[in-house]
Amino acid sequence: MRLRVSIFNTSSNLPLLAGIDRGFFERRGLQLQVQHTPNSDEQRAHLADGACDIAHAAVDNAVAMVERAGQDVVIVCGGDAGMNDFMVRQEIQQISDLRGKLLAVDAPNTAYALLAKKILKNHGLLEGRDYAVKLAGGTGARAAAMVADPQLAAAMINPPFSFTVRDQGLKSLGSQFELLGPYQATGAFVLRSWAQAQPEVLVDYLAAYIEGQRFVMNPAHRSDALALLGQHFKLSPPVAEGTYAALVASGSGLAPEARFNRDGFQTVLAIRAEMEGMWAGVPPPADKYLDLHYFEQAIAAARAV
Image (cartoon, rainbow, N blue to C red; front, side):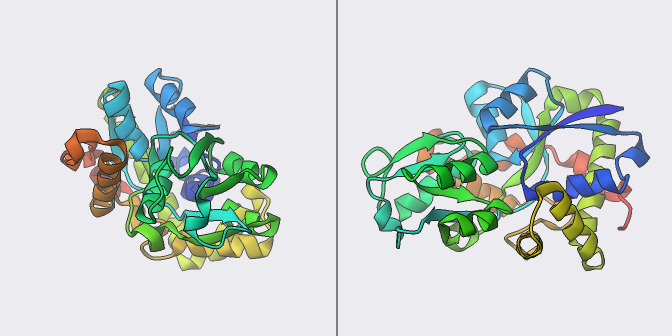
């Protein structure tokens, strides 16, 4: 069966790439058509209108689809904790130096944009009063825009781009994990109706994805994972090494077996409540956005790698 899978072109998708490379999906009769989305607005629109079947992105996008667009979307697995760095131009010495500057984001009111705004708020800076936001696309495009446009002073950027831009005039003022703590970032989400129509297919997909996550995180496969990073992202060996280290870092990198981090998701909802003024500031129960029973079936079906 052919599945259309929408992703951003970032290293957090290494488990998916490993699953394809190692035949984990093919072994279950699945052929993946991987779609690289330029931004989260397009990805959410494609999932809503059926142009893709499964989306992998920051799960706050699923929350936005439910709350802003009225789509019946459910999160079906985790993935990673974000691995973002708060990247700035060389002349920025501290976060307070961003007063009067531009923050580069993908979409202005979801996921990593809200993370950046929360970090800035924690340091006394508010959007509209102290800084402005400019749309610059997904992580790769956002990193390139920051390098090219000296007016873009800050952005959340994750590997491998958080490493490649350091040779192009940018630096980190701290990781997302250091600045905000645990966070549920990338996960898979689907239309509930699609999942209910073909539950076996979804379980097979998640089982293969779990195997890819296990493969990447297994130290025995480190050299293979580095080779995949180099192949897909054209990375130098030092950048590939740094990216892999970020991927397997405990707590801030890939989640073992792609498990969903409920505590990290509470942070997602709390930041959305605070920064977007939703739910009268009190986040709803997490289960509203989750259906993890497919994942639990997939864990039981996945093979050791």
